[in-house]
Image (cartoon, rainbow, N blue to C red; front, side, top):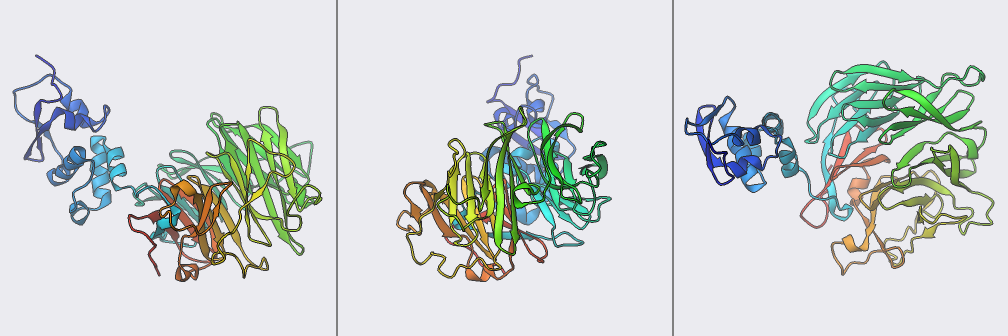
Length: 470
């Protein structure tokens, strides 16, 4: 009996309703999908293939396979969760995610699309977003999990009183840290259970005890976590993913000065196989801190800078960094200056004593003429070749000039660096509260604010301008 060809007509009986389509349409769902498997057998004349599922939802999914988009009435008739459950059964959930995912994130035309509010303790302490647009939100000692459709899926109830660090290290495993509990703790979202814990100990040094986690990142094979002890001794531990055992210790330091405090941010650079640690503190005399790059293969520091520093090598002595982040894809460092509010960039492929190049403000309308470092909060996040800056409650974006939407508008362009600055929000949006954390995931930007319930979800639209959401 000959095998079915892509042009052959195939009949399906889904829940008692007859459908006719081509083999190629069913196979467009991917070689591992149930529909592709059903269509690859020998051509048969024995009647339609019976599938005991909902026929109305199948009709929508079949339309998705034919046109790569959902019918306009689909989300009025069924919830996303109902469609997702059926798409998962047929093995075409990736096609559905693509069809309902937001357009490519351009900060210049992003707006608040939704606010996610966990049912209990709704003020997020921290969160972690994934590449598919899903997000884990920590609140109290719990973690609420939302899938790529931003549908609530589960809540993990941990043994921790609070969660201040979280990192998605496997599809269903999160690494958690707490300011009040020692160790790094691994939880499974599917089973809702504790998997393992890792502690920093040293029998030869009594100062190393009750070490808490401040920052977490990971590579393909390792997890990196910065620990600090009650007496401020700190280090970065490298944990083997296959065994969840400590394999290496990086940069143990006493923590008794701004140059030796625990890293509050860790970023892994896969292209250079290096780890960047960032620490910024604010005291009576302003901001101070350091940026340090390790090569975990040798355990050595390959580059570092301290601010305020000696002043001899810096063109901005007296204007130290308030926050720093890494553009992993572009291999760039960005910092925001604490006094001027200016943004600076350094090329990670060409670091030196003073690698910073400062953005030049050419439009007085957008100039920070009223900027004062006194009591102001600034947050920096790099995502998809864009730099998002939170200044108190305001959100702005710096994007490469080739991505700008309107060539006639040059709010701020640095010809040398090729970046342009725009406000993402409007004045009413900025009044919702001080921005605490910004993180990108999929084609979304997630924003939390101090003492404000829920997590804002920012997405781009097909319209110019932004929406004002109260």
